[in-house]
Length: 429
Ligand code: HSE
Image: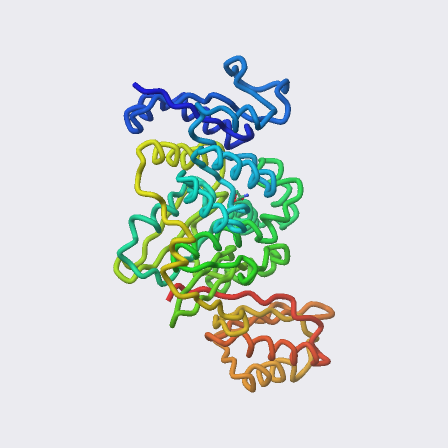
C-alpha cells in the first residue's frame, strides 16, 4: 500500500488524540483511505519535554521549515490553535502545495475567504470539520447530507465548558464560581475562561455554521453575544419553577432573507431533549424545510472526539472526496443576507426584579409592560425578605426593543431596587 506522509502542528490534547487514533485504528484507516499514513513530523515548542508515551526518534521538531520544506509531506494538520501563527503556517503550507486539516475556529471565522482563495489558487484541499463542535460531524452534515434543504434554523449547545458549568449549577445547585473551578480542575475550562464563559468560542462556531447553512458571509462581530457570568442559582431555581432549564444557546434563524444570529443564556422547556444535554456534551438541532428537525448530540471537545473529526478529514483528503463547500464559493452564488439588529429580534423573556414590598409596585411594573405592548404570561413572587421581594415574570413573545424600553422605565420606579435578570426564552416553535 502506498505511504503518505503528514505533519501535525501542535501536540497538545487534540494532537495526541490524532496520534492515538492513527495508531489504534491503523488497519481501518488504511482500508478506508487506501494509504498507509505516516506522521513524518510533529511541530512542538519543546522537543525535550517529557511526554506520556514513546514517539519515534526524530519525529519532533521545533522548526516549521522542516515541515514546509519537506516535499514528501502532503498534508499539514494544524492544531496549534491561536490566530496569527496558525494562519501564517497554514498559508505557507498551502503555498508549498500541502493540503490542510485544521480545528481552528478562530482562524476560520476570521479569515476563511483568504484561506480558501489560497487553497483554490494552490489547488489544495482545506478541511475544518473539527473547528465546530469537536466530534460532531456538523460541517459535513450541512455541506453534504442536507444540501437538498433550505435551512431554516440552527439551535445549538456548542460550548462544552459553559454547558458543564450550567449543568452542575442546575443539577447540584452549586454556584457559578464553584462550577467554574470544577470545570478548570477537570481540564474543560482554561485558566482564563473568557473565551468560553463570555461566549466568544460559541460565536465563532456559530459564524462558521451559519455561513455554510445560509450561504452567505457571516461576520462574527454581527452576532449578538452574551455569556453566562451573570446566571445565578436564583435564576436557575426560578427557571425550574416555571418549567425551564437554562442553557447557553447559539441560535441562527433565517426569515424573509434576513438572519437572526445570537448566542446567549436561554430558558428552554425542561421537557425538550436539549434540556437533557448535560456535562460537557454538545447538541445541535437543525431545521431544514425538507428534512424537518434533526438533532446531533456528542462530545464537542476532547482528544479522541476532536481527533475523530480531524482524522476523518485526513481520510477525506486521501480519498479525494468532493471538495468541501467553501464560504467563498457560496458567497459568489448567493445574495448577501442582512443580519437583523438584536433590538429587532423577538422572543419570550424571563425578567426578574428586586423590589421594595410596597403597595403598587406590581401594578406600576405591569402597567409599564402593558404600555410597551409586552404581555405577561406568568408571574411569581417569592417569600418577603426584610428589605426586598423578588418578582419574576415570563412574557409572551415580544420585540426586544419593547422589552428594553420597559426595562428602562421600570428601573426608574422608586420602589424597584434592581432589574436583576433578563433572559430570553426559546420555545422551539
Ligand atoms: N472550549 C471549547 C468548549 C472546546 O468548551 O466547548 C473547543 O472549542
